[in-house]
Structures are given as structure tokens and as C-alpha cells.
Length: 579
Image 1 (cartoon, rainbow, N blue to C red):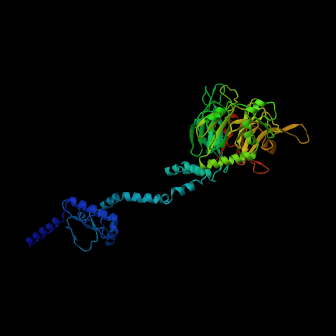
Image 2: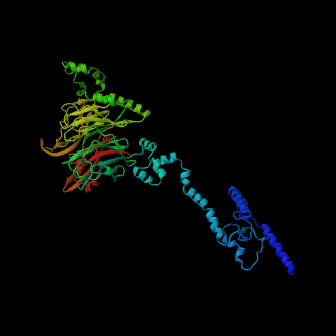
Image 3: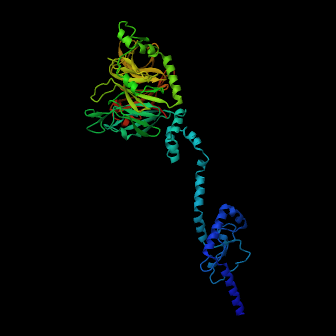
């Protein structure tokens, strides 16, 4: 009996030895099974209830120990049998029995950790796909169409979502789509804030559609004052200005430096860049922006014209060269130029409209070309300047132009209208600079609106119409000749007959002699700041000139200046953009 039992155990040991395999064979079989599982073999094995992740082999000497797994799913620990290693003093049973539908090559709890470790990458991939499913099925062009319709404040918030959105909303293509679309709203930008005697460099922006103010920090403008701003497409240009030499940042004109530098600020990207500096240092220059044709005169042509300083006048459309027949030398000198340009010299609105249409058609084929013109201002020695310069945005160069006409006076206001840069002087004279042709023209209008000399008139342009805001005394009712109230009136100049017509009256009393007004399409925006009873107040108004009544309305009151000094009334500058 004992010998039979011994021979039986020996036969069983021989069977176990036959089942033992090398580690290299186990590794090769495992790799094959993994490939089979990735190729869809798991479905076939799942039907039979056998997991192919575990090698169903048994080996001695620390090899895998076989145990039964009767569960239908691989990860169900409740239906798993205990492995043979947990059965103390018992033999291995049911090795070849029919009850087992799967095998487990690990002790209790090890299989879950091994399975999770090997499937971690698959879990991460599935979760990333699930989280970014919207991005996978939303093309970039459709995403751009959605983002381009957002208001500016929402667009700034959307840029914080991810790097991809930030990149899409700052590309030139996206900015061009937003510029040409109809999803823009007017924004007012107020510069020149002074706090505690120091130039804070802050920019206050007003969303006109929502009536909400935003504050933008501009460290690059700290310590700079008495500059002028103008808007060109999506950028705002800051030209000239002063800075104190003794106490940096303070508004101190006892010892200061006048700047030639020009900065460009993009509200859409909140970025700053330096452009070419002017030829002469200027503070408070008179600026104008104009779109020109693609064949705009080059740098040398303007440089050659700047020495030809002469003045032409227009009285009802007649040149003074032909009024005096004895000025033969002057007529002979400029006969050709007058014959070519007399028909479209200044007030012929139809001719300039034709030129603008021609310019627009030429610019549609290529990029739009704009120029910035700066005239007058105060020089480095506090002397009034009568010179002018023009900046080409394509070549990034400044070119000197003709000086203002002789005995014109100090330029106090200016604006571009229909390709002509109109300037007004403190001596109540009006002149225009033809930007395309490069010469000045004197303009005599009758009758000229009377105004209070302490309040210099402001020129504004809206959709090819030239306006002027001036302060005059209003006579009391029933008291002829008695001046009891000063009012600010809006006048329009008829460019054909050179006559002024009163359009409307501003509702507020003219408390600010340095009130800023800027035109945009059919709207005229104005800001007035003044100090009264120890407090600085501000009023923002708008006028729609497309309406026959041209009524004014308030859009904001006392939302900015409660923190500013009274010197902000003198240093402020206003610009408007559609963003």
C-alpha cells in the first residue's frame, strides 16, 4: 500500500515537473496574449469567462500558483476562490476539475493592484477624451466664429480658459475678422490721470453699451503727462508729452523734458509697442488720423514739398491767385498746380467723395494704409510750434511737412475730414492741409461763430461732416445785450458754401475750458472735468448727429474723478475705439 502511494506521488511530481516552464517562455507567451487582447481578443475570451491577462500555468519553486475564479467578471473579488497558498496544510485540489471557469495567478488583492497599474494609461486616455470631447468635435474655424461674437469683456475672460483659446483670439486673422464684423461696441479711453500729484499711468475705459468702467494699468505711462492720443484701427497712439527731471512722476513743469517718442497701445491684446520717434519733441500736439491710398507719396516727395511754404485761400471757391492779376510771378510759379487742383482744392464735397471711393477701392485689394499727422504743440523750450510731421504706418517713418500758413497763429484744435486736416488757431483762423497733395489752404468762412476766448473751439468730424464746439454768451430773455449765461453750442460747416450752421446746444454749463470731444461715425463723445467745492467732477455726454434734433444725453457721471487730482482736468486726453 505504501509503495503504491509512493509511486502515485512520484507520478504526480513528474506531471508537475512537466508543467514547469522557463521564465523566457512565460514572457513570450504573455506578450502574445497582450497583443491578442489589444486586437479584440478580450471579447472572445470574455464570452468564455476566462481572463487572458493571467497566464494559466503553474510552476514550482516560487512560480504562479493556480486558483479558481468562478466569477463572470475579472474584477469581482466576492466570487474569487482563495488561492492554494492560503490553504494551510492542504494539497492542491481541483486542478483539472470542471467547476473552474478561470484561473488566478496571484494571491488575494495582488491582482487588483496589478490590473490597475497596467490599465492606468488607458484610464487617463479615456478620461482625457471624455473631458475634451467638445474640442475634438468643434473645429477651429467654428470656434473662432463663436469667439469673435463675444463682447470685449467676455473675450478677455475667454482667453483665460486655455492656451489654445488665447492663441486663436490673438492671431491677425481673428483680429481682422473682429474688425470687419458687426459685433463691436464703442469704448472710450480716458488718459492722463493724476493722483496725489503723480502721473499714475492708469487708463480708464468705458464700455458705452453697458455703461461699465474698467481700469487698465499702464506702467509705461507713469511720469508722463501733457501728451495727446489718437485712435488708428484697433490701436491708440500716444504722441509726445513731458516728464519731470527733478521728481519723477510728478506733474512739475519747472524742470521737465519734452519727448519725441510715440507709443502704440492695443486694447484687444493689452500690449504696448514703440514706433518711430518724431523729428521734433512736442507736448500737446494736434493730431489727426487719415486713411490714404496705396500710392500715397513717398518719404522723399513729402521732404521735397516741405520747403514750398505758401498759403492759398478759399473764399466761396475762388483762389486768391486769380483775384490779383498783378501777381504774375506767383501765378506763373504755381499755375500748373492751381489748374490741376483748383477744382478739388477744398470745399468741393463731390470731388473728395470720388477720391475717397477710389482710395477705398484700391485698399480693398491690399492692406489698408493709414497716416498720423501731428501739427503744432509746445517745443522743448516752451515755444509754440508751427511745424508739422506725418507718420506712415506702413514704412514706420515720420516726414516733415509744410509749416502752417504765415500769420496763422497758434494751432489749438484740429481734425481730419474727407482727406483734409483742418486746424483752428487762437486767432480765429481756419486752414486745411491736403494730405494726399501735401499743401496748406487758407479757409475763410462767413459768418464765423462768436465765442469766449477763454474757451478755445474744438473741431470734430463725423462721417464726412465737419463740426465745431464753441462757448458763447447767451443773452437773457427780454434783456438785449445782457450776458447772463454761457452755453456750449455745436456748429456745422457747409463744405460747399463755407457757412456755419448751429446744430444744437450742450445741456451742461461750460465749466471745463479744456473739455475733450471726439467723433466716431455718427456720434460725438465729450468729457468735461472740473473741480468745485473741493471735489473733481466728471460728465460724459454723447450726441447723435444723424438725428435732425441732435440731442445730447449723459452716459456717465462722477464714476472716475473722485480719486483724481484737479490737474487731471488739464492733462486728460480722450480716444474712442470700436472693439
